[in-house]
Image (cartoon, rainbow, N blue to C red):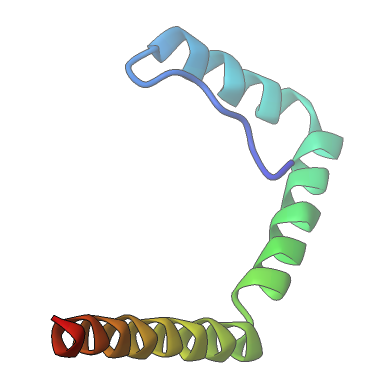
Length: 73
């Protein structure tokens, strides 16, 4: 858990979330630690490169499949 959710346009829910964060330093610390861990795991250079490699591979395969289907017709 890295944050609090509330419905769009619900100002009272936003105010309650902010009040909760303000009143609970331990909760803020847990969110900060969890957020930092998520960033390290999900957005590292190695992870970003791997995601781009997978994207390019998928796009190449999709294009190859389309070409193969056109040639089969």
